[in-house]
Amino acid sequence: MGRSKKIICSVINDLTYDQRMHRVCTSLSKAGYDVLLIGRLKDKSLALTDESYAQKRILCFSTSGWMMYMEYNLRLFLYLLFHRFDIVNAVDLDTIMPATLASKLKSKPMVYDAHELFTEVPEIVSRPYLYKIWSWIENTFVPYAKASYTVGPSIAEIFEEKYQQSFAVVRNVPFRQAMHHTKSEQKIILYQGAINAGRGLKEMIDAMVHLEEDIQLWIIGDGDLYEDIKDVSLGTIAKQRIKMFGYIAPAELKEMTKQAWIGINLLENIGLSYYYSLANRTFDFIQAGVPAIHMDFPEYRAINEKYAIAELVPDLSVEAIVKAVKTLSDEEKYNRLKQNCQRAAADLCWENEEGKLLDIYDRV
Image 1 (cartoon, helix red, strand yellow):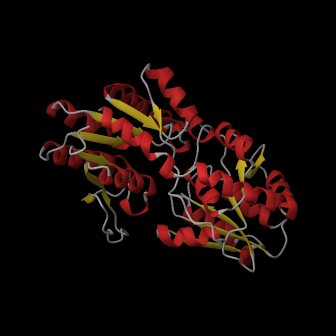
Image 2 (cartoon, rainbow, N blue to C red):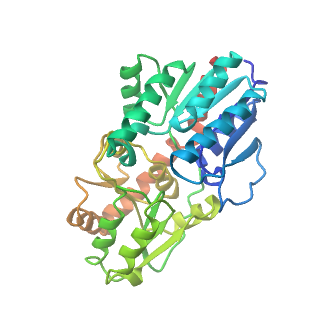
């Protein structure tokens, strides 16, 4: 099956917090592939941990914007040009240009991993000039992929229709976890993920004013709007019940998630990327045995219809959020959803997903 081949996986983010790529690279390396994961070195990057695969970070003098993208892509291309690989894996559109060019020059296959509908994220879809640029990149380079996969059925269908080529689905699910829920004295509503536009955090903060005094809101993660969301939280009368933690190491995050009462995944319907998303926190909450509040979007609706692990909200409004929280305050309903999480967790884990990943690379 050629599992002695060398695979270089390329991302533009910090490797420490990219749990999907950790799972992907771990599975590939344990299957016999020689795997190198390349990412970007940032000012606040933590020391890399020892893994079953190799890791490398590229330092850029530019830290944001188009200058950073251009510099990183050039440095990544030069690295790929002068180092051996049998397969290069481009993750999202951030790295598809250098990966494709290096693959063509070396006559080696490029595999594309789309974590989202990149051109439809709020930061791009709302800016016509950026949208045109990234759409050109997608239309130009995606067709060169020898194999492609993405995180959910809806996104796969969109890509398949657009490019008339197969997109496999490898969902962004965590490894199976022992479900030992940590009892907290407080009822903790937990958000984990990027602090970016359209994540429903302002609405959740506003909703805290209308919820009982024993309910806390924990916001874990960082992003472009971290300081803005922090200012919003400090400006509310519920500020004493809102905690912002910034980035948390993955192992510690798992333990904090187990303390949660309710998980939240509230997305504004701006761009198809959010509407058809299947966020990894969905599965993190399930593995931790934590019922959640999700948007009534197609992928979350499909999972909830099968497993009944969440309360869905029809829109991103304070009224809808408050109603959902109060619905989950019903002990009988809450315990039923919690039990359903245990059943779902046995199905929705990486151990059941990695075979699909290996099949993709074995066929390249």
